[in-house]
Image (cartoon, helix red, strand yellow):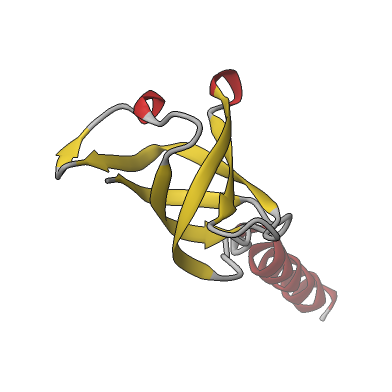
Length: 110
């Protein structure tokens, strides 16, 4: 009888371990998907980001994060993200993070 209880307890321990520790995945959700025109205000090349604001004077400034898979297009051709200069008006497609930074998936320079 005690042997069966130990087997059940071991099975329960393995099940709980598998349920809580092996099946967890980090959350990678985006709050909002965006696709707007922004005016570039400042470049931060070492941190792979730049500051941009919506095309109005009253809008707040957002950090646009450049990732490895971010595509930058100029006249339909893929270019380096360092081609973006302060004062450019770019279209950014991506999503907002929890701390209101923009993770850019695609940036279009006219």
